[in-house]
Length: 140
Image (spheres, rainbow, N blue to C red):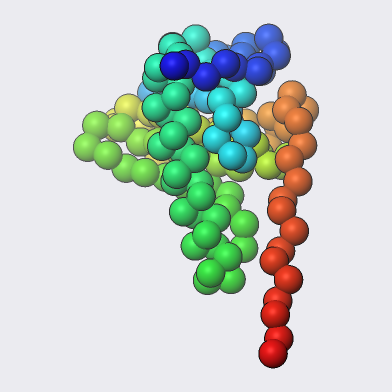
């Protein structure tokens, strides 16, 4: 069953613009921190949205847990290199999660810059998500 998108037209248009403007981009989505698809570029149908959301939410959760366990801080960007594509995952200022897939022939530095730039500006079109409070420490 496909997840409903809760996007505004502006956010969908911005994701389409990102995919059309950045060479090699073929899909883009924004998720809530818990993995709910909020918006997607036009190339993403409901089934693909669910699949990409699941993968992205899992990657993001692992990165967040790693940051907490190692004291490295919050997640800014995750890059997954596959044989024929890259998947970039970035957190927006408001806590939403952006994921963009690119073909494998892109210049990674240029793409990382574009993803970070978009993530830094997308908060204007997204709700703000607060981080959960840290668990209280127990002392015996």
